[in-house]
Length: 429
Image (cartoon, rainbow, N blue to C red; front, side):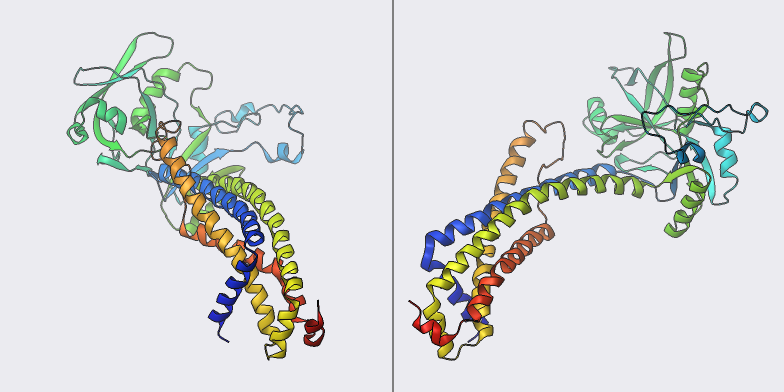
């Protein structure tokens, strides 16, 4: 008897007790439906994050920040316990790190960089505030400013990324407010107005528009400027602040793009009590958080599948009891234990398959409807975000997982059927 014939027989056997089989499949359906939606939700989050963060890239940059001293970490103090104060060394005021602060000066960062020949350039993360931006003396718009350090590139809808001084990139929404044809903005001069330290007077800068940013988390709202421009605005706004020239994070431009060398360099920074990470590290941290959320949601679906597996066991145990004489006759006519076991196992797998198939199909349909509705209501401001994204690997994973659980649930009844004595089975009433 061919394997395909066994599948057809297994399907016919399931149809003998239509209601019982239907109820068992519905239990599998609920678990599969839930598992499909939770995987789709995780896929949607991953897809959105990927589409947003991929727009800013730099394969040879490290984002470096100072950690608190190792001695403070070794105290193993609880979060609500006060930290001990340590006085900074006055005789090394320019180069020594304040043991009570996570901030560092540009000079201190540059001194650190000199210890590593792989480092080409160091740029602090400058804090800036702007009041407005305008083109050709037209309408003024509110604006948020961000900075692109050397080595960091922003993908563009028009023009190019920043590659020099006195340059600015516009987000798509702002660019279209100036001109629907964003290509016509490239090369124009934008005027940015900002307030200086301790004054209500607005100072202006003339910057050349070199590009329009591709949409992303930051690029949806920020205009990006070059490091020299950012430094100029920072100096005007912070030069009298007590924290002037102290920065929380620095961008280290490297001579190499080799992942192995960058990994070794990160370890060296760790030894000097600095944390260093790449764009890939930042993305991985986000994806790991999404993965943990997805695993938690999947656990609830697996509980439903576990409960449904008892339904499969019950269905097949009853089927074995009802078909005891039939199994005895099949064995008497020459069907071996292996084929009897395969037949009942196929019945359990088919219950799982039909339940999974219907659950996956329903989950995809509901997900698509939810995406269509939510994109026009609650998620309208999250352009390009689909709440549910269904991928072929995720669908195959759900189908295989459910069929595996169904098979394991059917092993015991199938083994019991295969062990029946044909003579005793034929006498069974």
